[in-house]
Image (cartoon, rainbow, N blue to C red; front, side, top):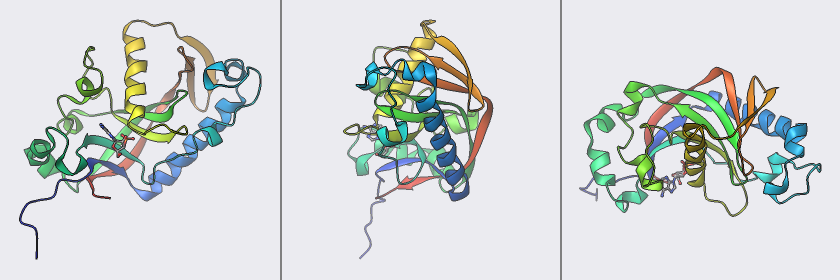
Length: 219
Ligand code: ACK
């Protein structure tokens, strides 16, 4: 028998299509490899639990990579999360479901916990972004809508992937406060910046475009 109620997925999001996913994984791989070998990075390894000037293989460090690269809009846990039924019923969500979107990646980042890509959403894409996505994890701060949009590229052992979006907001918070950051030159087609506490961000000179499908993941 069919279930009468529509099922709410584990999460909604934009799922990167195979071809662009392969390319993005390769870009991430190159970035992690080059950063591992980057002198200024090797001089600041204490936050990663390593001795400075040693080599840390970030590819191994971020050993856990998602099965499908995606940008989560709303985590629902099959309807258990507050507001998920309402989200699923939104006009924009119904209209956008199974449609193709091009996401724009503007930066790549690593922290001692996560590696990710920062996603810049268009006005249209923001209609699929939950109002409280930023407040949900950082209730005391104010961010422009969509600040948390990201694609998790990898997580360190014992770190959950939900952490990537939190780390990204941490970067944005530091940017907002004009936080100390050091411009350390160019690698991997962008400018690399060191913030604090092992936080590194590569601002890409040219945005990476990835083809995606907006959908639900049921697991
Ligand atoms: O990398 P992500 O955005 O972080 O993609 C995965 C996806 O949902 C499936 O687990 C994200 N996620 C997990 N838990 C939460 C949560 N409580 N709030 C928001 N996103 C979450 C995770």
